[in-house]
Image 1 (cartoon, each protein chain N blue to C red):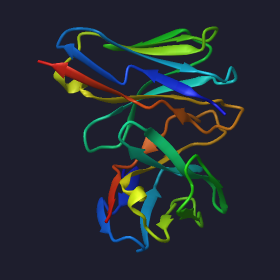
Image 2 (spheres, chains in turn cyan, blue; image 1 turned 90 degrees about the vertical axis):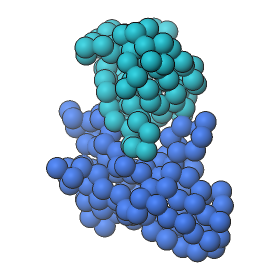
Image 3 (cartoon, each protein chain N blue to C red; image 1 turned 45 degrees about the vertical axis):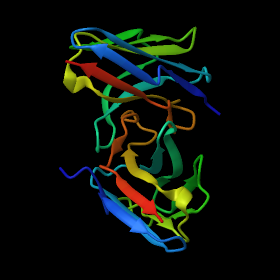
Length: 113
Length: 115
């Protein structure tokens, strides 16, 4: 089955710095790559996603980049703010395959004011 | 819009007791699933369903049962609770095998403690 590795497990930055979280996957058939944000005491919520026909997608301060050849994708958060502090999960899915997403183990991002 | 609703939010059980975690969604999603979240382990899939009457096992199914009699509801049953089942449980739903397949919608979670 699919194997998703997510790094780092914890990330501590100063407000205003950039944060980068990286995920690697094993199944070359995977073609949908979402990122979820989980705030304390809540369920995960989709913040950005990318499909395999594009290499980069941006939404204000967040962006996702995809390298299908190397089988990795990354979440980039610029100008971090304290409200960005949360656990972030990457996921991988193969539309046309099982359609069941596989999650990374999560990254705890702490933004210090 | 209610989205995905889970009940109860908190529950304490004694070893050997049984209980059911309820999950309901109002988005007409075909796919529904249960995850457990433990520190350092991420989200692990317990059971999932791709439609009424269809269920399948995920990564960690032992000790849990599910059924899907309607599109809206997907209850998770613990038949004989064990301390190892202490966790936070999330129900999630999405479209399945359509052009809208992708985003998972999660409930707020159910925190279960087994003594």
